[in-house]
Amino acid sequence: MGRKTTRYPVKTANSLWHVYKTIPFWKVMKNFIFIQLGRYIPILPLKAWLYRTFLRMDIGDQTAFALMVMLDIMYPERIRVGRNCVIGYNTTILVHEYLITEYRLGDVVIGNNVMIGANSTILPGVTIGDDAIVSAGTLVHKDVPAGAFVGGNPMQIISLNKNE
Image (cartoon, rainbow, N blue to C red; front, side):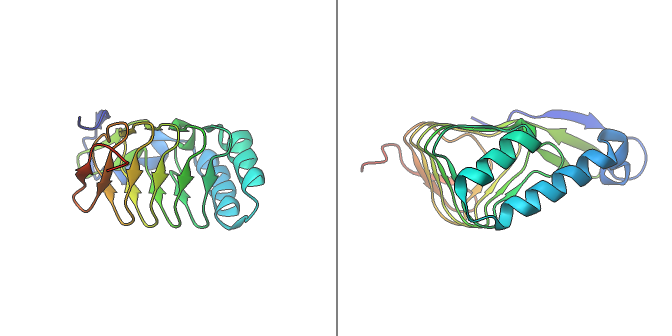
């Protein structure tokens, strides 16, 4: 239950130095504008519409992105969120990692009826199963089973049945 990422090695300088060889500058600028708008919009249906329309994200009905959620600025279209989810305040969802000798990309899939607590970080290539609960301040560095309650840094499974 690790992370599913694709690795792209670089030969010279660190991978972030080559960022605009991996993604167009204007795409990043457009994404930046709409992500920043969405971070402050308090009207949840409008925020979801903005993300679906301009960032091409797959978001289920009645999913709520709280204030200040930071989506991946490079590839937000690789984030899928199911229906009736709550993405807590100041959560960060990443689908890219720029490292010294490589960069990695991996889709993030969040199931239905998932609760992500405030100030959590979800790393690339992670799947969070249906009905899971992620405690506030959690670093989600691996897959979360359906119905699990997880928390901490590093993330640990606290309970495999959310009703325990």
